[in-house]
Amino acid sequence: MLIKPNAVKNGYAHEIFLMVHNHGFKILAQKKLQLSEREAQAFYRVHAGKPFFQGLVEFMTSGPIYAAVLEKDNAVTEWRTLMGATDPAKAAEGTVRKKYAESVQHNAVHGSDSDENALNEIFFFFSAREIVNAGGDIYQLHDILKND
Ligand code: IDP
Ligand code: MG
Image (cartoon, rainbow, N blue to C red; front, side, top):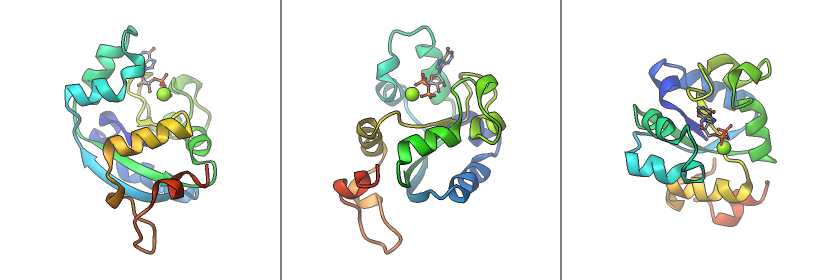
C-alpha cells in the first residue's frame, strides 16, 4: 500500500497506519520516500495513455509518500475493502478514502489489485531484506503470498 502525497502533507499518515493496525494488518515493511517522474510513470504504467495519467504522475511526485507491506489473510481484498472506492464520493463509511480522500485523484491511499501485482509492487519499493516479520526474520517470497 501507499499513502499518497496529499495525505502525508495533511498529516494523516499516522492515523492511516493506526487504522491499518486496528483492522488486523501487520506492517512488515514501511518507508517514506519521494517518487521521481520516471518511477511514478513506471509504477502506474497500466494507466499510461489514460486522460488522468499525466496528472496522476504529477500528483504522485509532488511530495513524500509512505510505502508499506501489509500482511493479513486475503490482504489484497481486505485492504481494498478498508481503503474504499477510488472515488471518495462512492467510498463507504469507515473507509480510509471516505475519511481522508479529497478527490478521485487525491484519494489518500493506493492498494494493489491482485496478489501478482502486490508482489511486483512490493519489490518495486523494497528489497527482500527490508521485509521482516515480528520475530525479526526476513521474509521469503512464498511467505508473503502464503496467506493471500
Ligand atoms: P485504485 O487506486 O482504486 O486502484 P485505479 O483505477 O487503479 O484506482 O486508478 C489509479 C489511481 O489513478 C487512482 O487511485 C486515482 O488516484 C487516479 N485516478 C483514477 N481514475 C481517475 C480519474 O478519473 N481522474 C483522476 N484521477 C484518477
Ligand atoms: Mg488500481
